[in-house]
Image 1 (cartoon, rainbow, N blue to C red):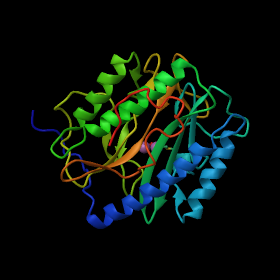
Image 2: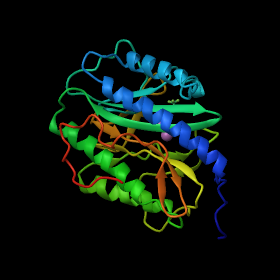
Image 3: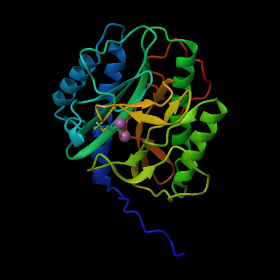
Image 4: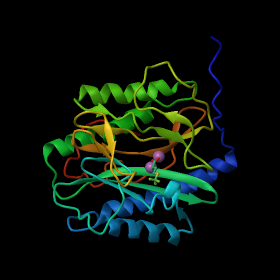
Length: 275
Ligand code: MF3
Ligand code: CO
Ligand code: CO
């Protein structure tokens, strides 16, 4: 057969990249502040209300709100929730929970998308394991991004590590190109084969956001039509950054103070850190 249909992946201009850098930092700042407020007794609605207020205070807009009918300004995904959890007054954080908060801002027409999984109080060893594996998977995925490299390098790095650690990688949801649109081409699969997949070029902007499960990789969608949970009820964790392929590597457009926020109880779980 002939070659595959070319995907329309945008190359961002220096001007566009400057705005992507700005919106990325705004989103990351909001996420950092969320990390500092996580504690037992907080409702996920309170997280939502904080994110909404902090976003508009920055003259940005929370991209999730009304996105394909999503009813809140942020996704909050606790324990066995894989992604797209809907904040609620009834959902109260309890000691030992893990919770992913996924913040996406729109600013001057461009999106910045980033998430982290936080510990509530002191979680058990299995919760720490899946969270730290997910954190490391994002770092390894980012480490595989380089101009001339392939998207398969990213998926392969994530899959190899997650599976070696006894976890599974969700394939029902993927990372994505990002820019003027929340979700653009390419799709960034979190499993893959080194040397395969789309070639990466300077000026591409996309997310890497591995969802890592302790049990099976399959998900189910709840009746609210958004909340994705693990099919076996096992714990799931996720971290996300928005990235730029540069002429000599990769730039994290959503950087925070360290990548180990709210995990100071386990600072040496892995010795390796992303740059
Ligand atoms: N922020 C999610 C992502 O990383 C998408 C959330 S869509 C929403 O792609 F509608 F649930 F907000
Ligand atoms: Co995303
Ligand atoms: Co996101």
